[in-house]
Length: 114
Length: 223
Image (cartoon, rainbow over the protein chains, first blue to last red):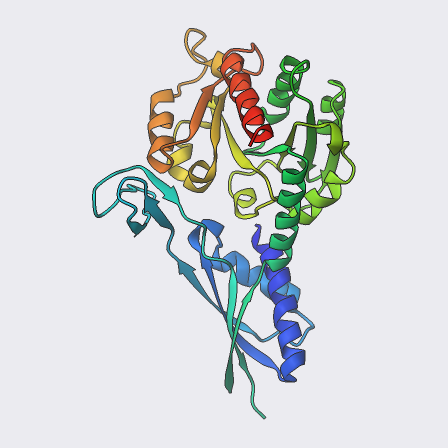
């Protein structure tokens, strides 16, 4: 349930943006690499609990999971890593380096218009 | 309804602390290893034996992470190594800010190696960078040989894997565990991972593990 810490940071970031734009947020789009192992249900549950009583209360989350990327140590090809059978699609090598995971990003906020 | 592009990192606070920790450790030429496993895999027992075996060669400090209690810190204190206990009060992983606070309470000028013993959990700690030099995954044989296949992230991200409690395997035969399967599955995710089969109870396999630690500390010192 590391989603709790993510939700705390997410609520704080949206609150700061809401006060900057002086508007009520109703939706937020976030993205994260799959290595973060974010479970949508757990994140929404934690978000709801933390956002309660704040201007973020009605925010609906949309979560995009970005694929894990690796770089082949044999031919340097960049590719999407499938943990069930990681293999370079170009040369077939199984020797690869895991590339840094896509960061947890708040991509977009939807605000209510008066 | 208006949509506004934001493009902000959500965990930037943790990243900033992680960066600060890694810079501090590099300046002090300290190797820092973040140990991650399920609860009960033997992390603290491994640390106790490692500290004792390397007593005359490497100066080791420990940061202990647990939801509550000082139990682990007390066990490390018995070895006379400096230790700081972090209590997360419910959180299932350590954060870089907590580690940054703990580093201030360790005598870092006199240390070569710091072990961070993360909260026992095979999933959550792997998502939070602490500023460490590398992660060490620990898997004990009673947990089963399917763990790298079922929890791939930590095995994919680790520098080394310790397979602990091998004294329970043949000839004692208390536990069925296919050590070859674990090695194959872990190397499929991470070809360069160093794997040590050990028993923190009997000391089996510790010579190779300690040799690797000494080599890693030396490489960092003369980097």
